[in-house]
Length: 467
Ligand code: F0G
Image (tube, rainbow, N blue to C red; front, side, top):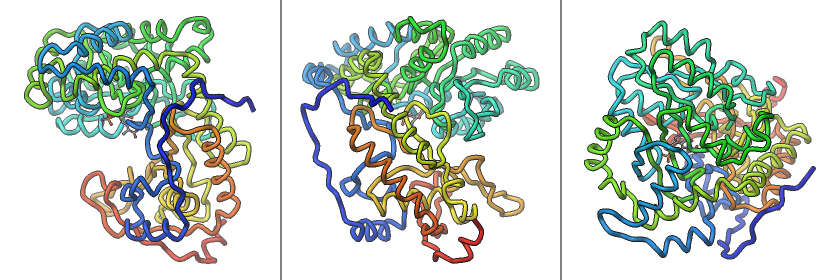
């Protein structure tokens, strides 16, 4: 396999500590087996999220020293505005402290109760912010997205037939905007093709419905377009991004991903009236329009990060590193979601632990085992996060996919550390039958995965006979 060698060298290091199994076991018990409750200092390789966890460049850190902390008209805002305009191309640039605030401002302005926002798949905060307005957050990704083994180059694509059916069924007045999440995080970090974006644009245009992007991982999506859509093979990432955003009317962005910063986000759009209403709300809840809940230095880091992320050597390394981890696992027979996405590798927990029943929470059990045995922290994306109680029957409704996401922070871990992760997961797979299931003993009424507590079930021989 070709090694995606790092296109940077290390100037500053942050020590990480190896802990013992006994220590991790104790911490897990104290945490009620909830990995969100484990102190980060006791994690060796932290793959909980790729959000806000990037390493900034020397150029970004230098920019931090040039922070203009004026309340109004900070110099850094103009740099930031210029960077956003040059890539995204929309008229209004509204900074926010992170992505979900951009979502909140947009939806609280344009979405009314009884409306519906279609998306390929809404990320949790996007869904929650749509639903908070009393509206329906509808996922209309192509059906292949739910098959972990189905190999398609653009598995994040919108199902255009279902989108048109939805518009016809509800009427355009109930759909204030259509969204596309690039890449599609909740569907495995899969990209959306330029062709699908163009067709989505053509469709919504006929009904005069605006198209917005959830642009968190836009550069990674553009890299996949360059790699997989022949006509873009010789186009720069910047030009691909400009064309892509040209098909839309605006975007929300968590710059904690492809902005290569630890905090920051924005909203950018063309609609004059919406921008005015959003800005008024921004002043109420975030801050003055030239800082939007951020320091001047944060805006500078974001302006620089947005340009750096377009660098093809960086993206080749970035996508290559994620793919490297996925290929090592796949080659060893570890069940993962295919194809390998842009920011994370997703372990298929049902296939990894076939001896566990759905109610024994296989993805939670796998995530816990990875931490207890190797100090690696991933995140459960399965029954704990998305399972629902059927109000009528009281039974659990299980999500379509039961996964552990291993999200790779940008520019943070070396390929050796990634190799350690792969080898650990492969070793664990060989003795997977020793992994016991879990039972939830406490759950909060909303977003339960952050605070839930669990109890380990005994490993039973009967579990193994279920194989
Ligand atoms: N949209 C997508 C597609 C996301 O992945 C996220 C965050 C957000 C919006 C919200 O952005 O965190 O800045 O408010 N995803 C993180 C994750 C938390 O781990 O996938 P935010």
